[in-house]
Amino acid sequence: MIETNKGTSLVIIILSVIVLIIISLFVYWQFFSSTGEKENINFIEEGNIIINNPGFVENIWYLSYETVGAPANSVKLIFNEDSICENETNSCLDLTIGDRVEIRGLENNGEVLVKKLEKIETLN
Image (cartoon, rainbow, N blue to C red):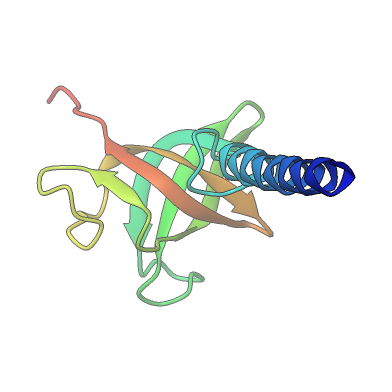
């Protein structure tokens, strides 16, 4: 009888550990992973995209934008396979110099890892 209780207790402990591991992975995925629902976006700005301007790294896209008290800001844009670009072709490879866009991403050391680029339609 005692051996049966030990076996049942061991099974319950093992199942509890497995459930805790699953819950921990889910919490990590939701709150800390870049693919989770909350992507830790710390940069949201609207401006124009530019490339190959004097003083910038060649063949790298930048966002030129304004903030209160600083009319001419620019930030280097980094794209990866998870970047979403909502433009005419939905491609981050098909961008046009001067397009008005909203950038949502993760800023770090003067660069922004683009999570989402959305073209803003302007009235001519």
